[in-house]
Length: 223
Ligand SMILES: *Cc1c(COP(=O)(O)O)cnc(C)c1O
Image (cartoon, rainbow, N blue to C red):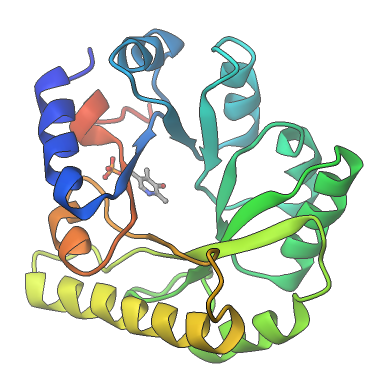
């Protein structure tokens, strides 16, 4: 399955008026596909699995910005801390503390997004609103991380009204957090929402980073 360059250009056109950025989600896809999009000018790529990310990063140019978008286990942070550009799915103080510790070992500060659970589906990932504020109260002293914003995944449904409501709710929460913890700060400006199926709605509801995979690289095969 090759890269769909038409879809790539269409997505970039959609992002343009919003000044939003594209995370090209290349999980499970071969390095050749990443090279093809890199040649088109794409620099931000998203991966879900630590080993796969480390392998791919070693084979691609240094100026690729790697975003880790999956569920990250604390004991694996050390493998990506030397080079990862942003970590999207942080949902515990333990994980954030480990990222900070590993970042400092490499004299780095790693941008992190806190993942909030906005979908109706049951999942163990993502913070509730209450947990989010608790984490923010406790995260202040971690010198190796910069909390760059929030991340969320809407319900997997055809009901656009519901998806829109979930994205809009996260945007409202983002505003509240910004006002309380990062006022006047140039940081905490990212809102990572939207995937292949719902990114247009996400853009209308304030997304600054869309994470798009199958639209660019074709359907994934987990066989
Ligand atoms: C796989 C994945 C995506 C991309 O999904 P598509 O529907 O293929 O665009 C986005 N975000 C996360 C967290 C993912 O795991």
